[in-house]
Amino acid sequence: EIVLTQSPGILSLSPGERATLSCRASRSTSYLAWYQQKPGQAPRILIYGASSRATGIPVRFSGSGSETDFTLTISRLEPEDFAVYFCHHYGSSQTFGQGTKVEI
Amino acid sequence: QVQLVQSGAEVKKPGSSVQVSCKASGGTFKSYAINWVRQAPGQGLEWMGRIMPIVGTTKYAERFQGRVTITADKSTDTAYMELSSLRSEDTAIYFCARDGGGFYSKWGPGTLVTVSS
Image: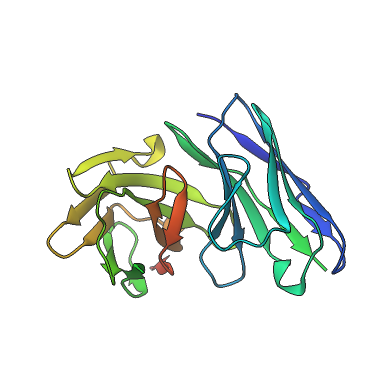
């Protein structure tokens, strides 16, 4: 089973700033997705295949990385972007990172 | 566009079982897998298992083997997750999520299951 470790646990930023979230995998994978979750809501897919934006996701969200090191970047934070972000390995096993909270 | 509609909140006693349903509204499951993921209060996401409704094949996370059963009714486009031998640690929101190519392209709203004596 691949273990995903996200950092930092909490990211305190202001609207308009750039957010950089990290997800490190215990073994190499190319099946890496990112989700956004707001309080009281289900997660929403943002990025799959490490760098492909899902349908309807704004271009300020981008994913990068390969093998064991992955990054989600939000170029300029909008008020609605303050949420928790999870990475997800979806290969033969299914695991999630513990999440990064992006707060004001 | 298909939406996933889940059954309502449940309160269960320790040792009992719970079944949560997930129905595709406005569409069908087609050939997509349906996954079940849970989230304990204030915690992260935990994959429990999946089913491919079109053929009925299932796969379960090792830690839930023997305690979780996932089924699907193709005629009603409804998937079910049953968790048995409930304990307080099973208190969580249970989500169904449709595969979009391995990742989860669509999620149900979640069902809160509370286990309490």
